Length: 636
Image 1 (cartoon, rainbow, N blue to C red):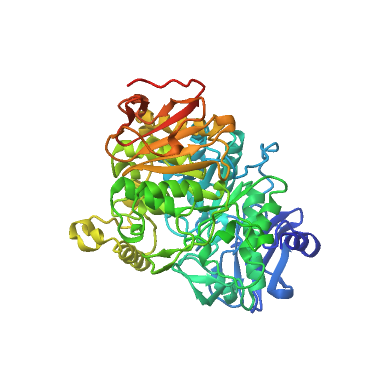
Image 2 (spheres, rainbow, N blue to C red):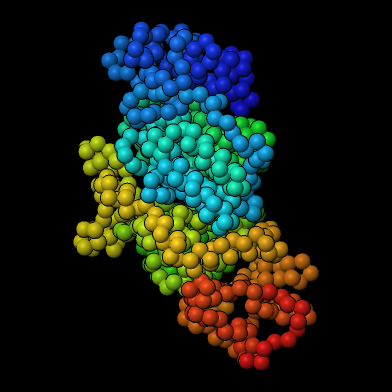
């Protein structure tokens, strides 16, 4: 499909992209798909309306002289009184209900000609919502924070969706202009400058895209072609996209082209595909596979990363097409998040019910990725997941915070505020050193105290429906469902204060230097240590050594091993540990390499971990022992 798209551009249209408005020497070329319509007109607001010529397969096209980059336009469909934005608009300066603007994507002078992209192995991700990342909520302001992320050791920024949507604020998952970077965050070239600056600092940027539904307001695709959507499938958020029914060929082309567009015209380093379980397609190859192939082709030799969110945990997504897979690089791993949250907070309500936060879960997650790979999942009353024991560790994106999970509570609290501060440090060590691909959520590195809520700005009737829907979703948690005081403090997603409270306070980054040091040192250790940096399958083993404690043994070359010991409970003291994984390699002994209880991180010091009298771990701590060439051991 990727090759077909390029063939379509060069042989049948002579255009950069098959749809949208493209300025050129003779004027602006317009092309839009509107099967079933008899006439399509370009309306600029000044001068006459311009009729487009009908092509095969329901396309209308034409070049209009005198229209240049920066001009506004809309489409008239037959005799409709309403004028419509371009479905492939590259910018909506006043939002989805208003005119599109002609953009010249070639006008920006890129500085990243030497940039070769980023693969998934060895990377540390950072999820960002542009509107709340800074007080200004713009790409320009976010770009000023990129040196901080570079100093932290971040490799890839995962940007939440930016396709334009109505209102003054939102998460972006209700986008309706899929080719138009949201006007809320700046001009399209501001986004290009952000990506360019990230590349100068050695950071890749991947974009979260939504190909399973469109938002409920400002979505006019069905006015151009009802076959964009289907009632043969259901999603939780709106009408499903028609990828395999009647008229689906051009629908597929539209979405596949969109994936290529972000990679090619904005130099993104990959995509994160939202809720892939709701991208329905019974045909072969699956549209997801074609999206991935088109994105890689659009990168023109640059390495890119494609990540999927998939609630049922279908591992075929990250398998090669030759093996029946879809060719993604990685999947989000909710299982580890759930175990971590239960371990920190002690609560396992609702979708946390199948997780106990016990040491064995952390050992299994480090070794195998998903915890549920086909066994019964009681919360849903069915089996969950598919086999993935053979997957490379990098294929699992691991996290203890993300936009969904922080917001899925009554008060949007971060995990570091839900339990003992030592537990947050210990789990952070586990997250950043275990062999998965770790991801931090914005502000996590400085223990942000800002909540992160679900927020969206809609007209009153729709806002009321969203507010009630959100409340209903949260009642799956019994403490919210039955406690009137808790219900009373639930925020309204449509209030601007909900959005404003979700913004990061960057003064905390200056104050919480201990938290920043913790994250920076762990990322540096992950990258520089020859054992932790290997990230190979089968490179570690683990064991439970106490009610709240476990060890991970990382195997190095020639016995140069590492032992990560994590205690998520009270002080651990044992005269001996009858497990061979804690025994040092032949002729060596363990020496302390790192501890989460360093005062520089806000800890209270670390005793000798192994002595002739036994083993000691402080409460809520993590330590790393390295195999030393010395064979001596402390007396006490």
